[in-house]
Length: 103
Image (cartoon, rainbow, N blue to C red; front, side):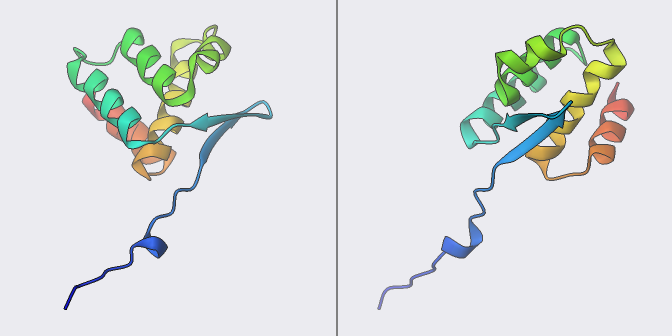
């Protein structure tokens, strides 16, 4: 007799967004994107603007990076932390605290 396990109810497949000034930015948390993101992070020599740019581009798209381009460094980290919180299913505060400990 075959064993059947129905995983249909376990797959959420919900879309995730961050919002800034009323504009929604969809967070791409697909498996392939997350593989790219963690490859970028693992290949970086610590936190850098270049690394954050690349991660945000993968997760939110080039348009979002342009929208956040003029932010001060501390403010630029906010959408980065928010996007990473979405993909890791953690709170914003948990991601921020973890990042600051590593930096």
